[in-house]
Length: 152
Image (cartoon, rainbow, N blue to C red; front, side, top):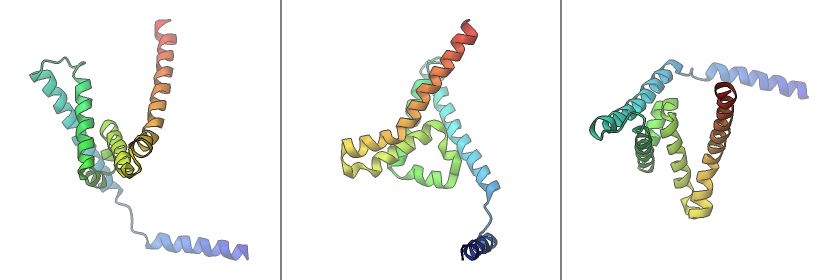
């Protein structure tokens, strides 16, 4: 009996493969490239604005640029614009800073009915926690490698 069920499952899987539409991988790759590149272009434009109009150095312009990208991404997420952009752009919308801000803000908005501490705070850091831990651990190992191989 189990052999018959296994063959039925295999036949059903092969039947489904013939009926499923193909994935438009080339179109998705082009969209991701254009969207991710556009986000990076906007970030570069913001940084250049800080350098040329506010007389920041290139090194010091990075922090306010990141802050503005996070703010704009969170604002657009709250207004529902970033989600539509993400559906169109696919992986291109997950450019690290804006994609991370989007995921944190989405988690906060989704759980705001549970309260600020148990809902917003807990669920924001459920998303952010692994990223923060990975960042700290990675920074430790990079610093250790630099200490051992460059300083020594």
